[in-house]
Length: 132
Image 1 (tube, rainbow, N blue to C red):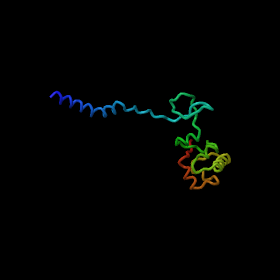
Image 2 (spheres, rainbow, N blue to C red):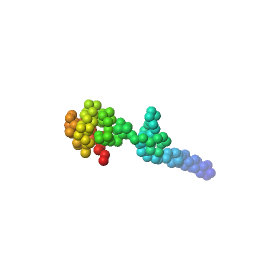
Image 3 (cartoon, helix red, strand yellow):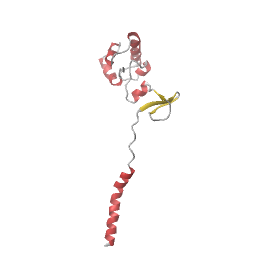
Image 4 (spheres, one colour):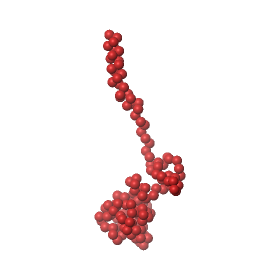
């Protein structure tokens, strides 16, 4: 009888080991990271807002790589060239038009730029935002 109880306890321990291990070894849920520019030139990087290092604003190409949108009223021609649907030439046209005619009130206003049509604007719309 003692052998059967010992065998039953050994079987129960063997069956309970895997779920118990999973329960005890589950890693903690990581804290969410808000992307932020850190460091100073030439040693700068994209990290979390809680990381050490001097804070700096994200460049437009970094914002695009992270999936954030770019403001055509603030971005340079180099930064706008990274927007899908805009080439280097069109990015230069956007900046030149902005300097001639003033800032864009909304993304749809980019249609006033020579070379930007409805098709190109549809490609670029998801990557652009006009901030107040």
